[in-house]
Length: 122
Image (cartoon, rainbow, N blue to C red; front, side):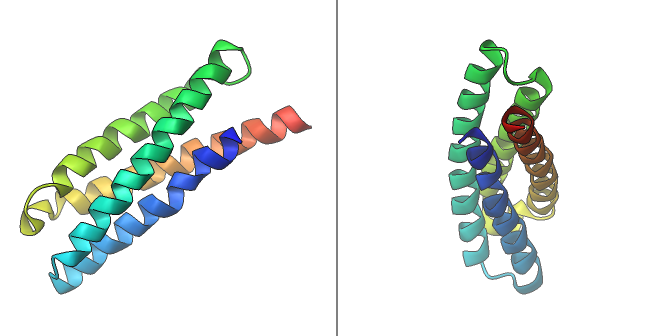
């Protein structure tokens, strides 16, 4: 279950990046609203994955690096949410760059979660 939660935020962060890109091309403020909601949903999922990874870490079944990657994903994602809370025009280009960074962090953390799942089920 942890691997599913750890990777489920990835499509939401990807959607936020694509919404930011769409805003940078069209300047329609609704795209920033979409990004804000997608980031908020992804942060909920990353928070759940962090809690689950912490339990696994305390039981000795999961690595510290994976938990730290989830923490970095949450922190950068939270900063991204704060940037997206500003006026739509004020989010660019910082919001687009942060969305790209948090997507990469989420992909690496999700990949590590899946690798841990495969390792424990082998």
